[in-house]
Image (cartoon, rainbow, N blue to C red; front, top):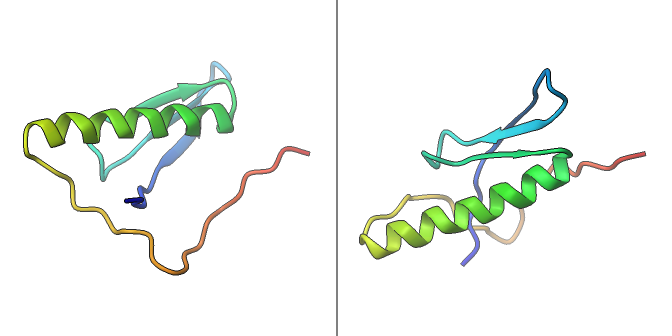
Length: 76
């Protein structure tokens, strides 16, 4: 099942990007580009969900419906 997680992404003074989520405690990802940061954040989120499933805990997140808005990042 796919779920939607809201991320906050900011560019740090060091030139890297940092992603965090208020919805998923412990989700912190850092990358050289926005795309790399998103890929790392997705992997971290999966690992957090797997660990919570082993402990029979879970985070209630909205499931993906028939439509939703998505901000696409494109480098030009």
